[in-house]
Image 1: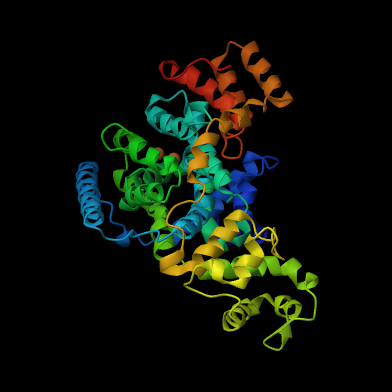
Image 2: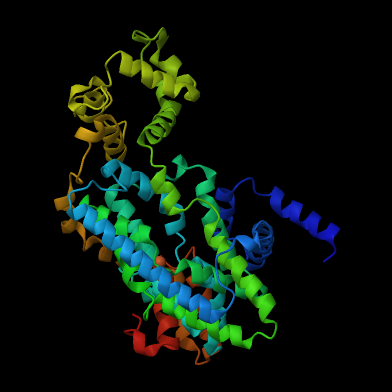
Length: 469
Ligand SMILES: [Fe+2]
Ligand SMILES: [Fe+2]
């Protein structure tokens, strides 16, 4: 395509979306055709890949060296984790999450990327007839829990957020948190020319990082269900798990490409896409409950600016006046601290503001959700008085079976039609063709997607599944 035309097309595609959040919504919109998504994916990926500097990528150039470096990396990660455990056994503090509020902040900020877990492999599902892709297809199906809600990674994360009351925090996040999810969804709809990039991306994503091990350990310590993190430690292993399968496919496809240089350059660029956006490590290093509390109060101010009476003045302004300008939330909080309504680094019960929002008879009881109150509590409590364990930890184990019921009722007309169509034909290619749309990132964690995943897995890997239905 001539440069000028390409640029015009690029601008047109770009103009429709102002930010990554909108791009993520676009890719997850089931009313938009795959053709449109493929066009957008091509534009976005080319744009992202152009930004990558090849000489800064640490991936070795030859498959054997990559395997060696993975083994070494795995050993280093294992050793660092043992060092961490030894430090903890010797009595040192948690290193990632000081309290429950910080763990909540982490879970909220990684949510956009967890909600599209595995999506970068979706486009490969149409290559079911080519065994060279079977290991990647299997990784995708395992990300989808082979169609079992209890094992589907997106369902597990959604369930975790639901149990903690953290489902509605996405509007608190800045757009950059949607950068990596937008890339993963673009890979989901990428045309075949991007297969080497997908393989490279997958090679990087399926490795076991140190932060996953420590996150898993510290969440458990705080009384938070760490199943999502734990299963990535077991399922992604280098011995026979996703890391192993990722390397095997890469090696097999490498052998098929005539121009190995060109292939490796594309693999490396795909690998580097892992680094785009905000990483888990960056999120952990920059946890800041005060900023999150500001964000929560700014949102409340949208309604709060109209509902307070004008009798009470704080720092020469009424509460309504303070809340009219969300940019002044920081100064407003400073005033509340000065007036001793908020006492930082003390037991929150000593603060008027805390009693107002958390006691049943408090004037602002019900304004903040339990999860928001936990975050505010741990910000106010500081080192000494923040929650070191989830207050309702013991109740959570009792609600575990609830998840089974959440999906049992989702048999709907669309699903029944699909089941009839798939059952009516004996032709394999038609069955796959009918099932594939429901394995897409926007569907696979819903009733119809879970059924389609089970059926797809049953057709391609019968040894793995119990029959669907
Ligand atoms: Fe996963
Ligand atoms: Fe995985």
